[in-house]
Image (cartoon, rainbow, N blue to C red; front, side, top):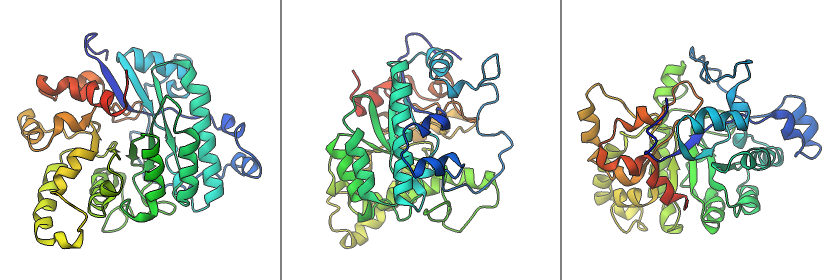
Length: 354
């Protein structure tokens, strides 16, 4: 659907598919031969999704998927939704969890190069994320330093799953490099439980896609607790973290519980100099998709009053995934007083967009 022409929209989560043959052009040996053989990532858990991953209508008349061609995604998504900007997030989010540091870092660098060299020149509205490998934070920092000053790189993209909680000091080289280049760090779900990441849920491995998909927000809750309690935002006061595609309305109860427990247990994290909820609302942003959608919209809007939603939420379509949202569909959920902030202005501020 086409949004209102007067409504400015910035989309923080768009998923192109990178041409694997083109990736080979940026890979040195011996990684080029290995990647060409089909050994490409940390794998997946194999859950069956009856809706597939991509929208079945996201194809051109000749059957070509829209999301493999930059000109097509510019027309059929950016033009159709009246987007001012959109961030292209690499869908190959499992590669950062490969246990092989040099291979993973080389392949991810090639992904990043294809996105920057082949996609960004096609449309000035395109912004890029850069991925990094988690098996070696020093190599990850090098990749951020290599591309971090590119004027159209928006953020550093990490998988929702990780070998250690993201508050651990193991990851400090990544955060240090990100803040040096004024880049937010974004988390995106997908490969939890694969490669070097921990199990996808605290209780173990779900047995179906429905269970895994619904439980994604629990991954983000644990990562956020780690980031806050272990003092990442005190160590890096300018760091911003974006939680993509993990839901929203779990946040107020988590902040209440964390503030209550911090009052009694603050000696265990002496670097926290104020209530954790204040730290979260200063440093964390969330994308709208897949925002909770109660039958009674009044319930939704009451929840919005329980945290700094008008300054923390940013529109995302998740295009072309099967459960994505168009701007008009997402925008209707929010009261008029905060709609412009959610649909564009918060992203404009975070990413310093003119």
